[in-house]
Length: 89
Image (spheres, rainbow, N blue to C red):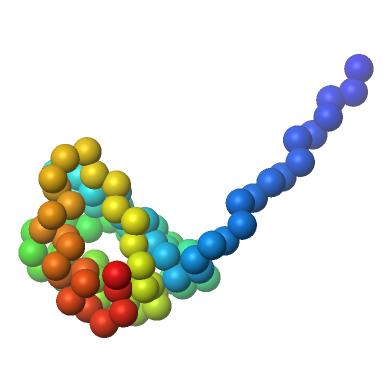
């Protein structure tokens, strides 16, 4: 009996300048496309300075849009700092 190997499938890239932020109460994990940074996923704490460091890193990675995942209203403090950096929506 031979075992069939599943074909590798990938989804089409819709927006190559997008990043994802998984927002928690104490820290957040941010992922960018692998060609944008030596470390394509980073963790940031929830303090104001860390939020601005995250926005600067995303700008440096040429990110123009982010998708935020949050189980509550934890995303609210991130909105204004992110959109205040050039190019992020």
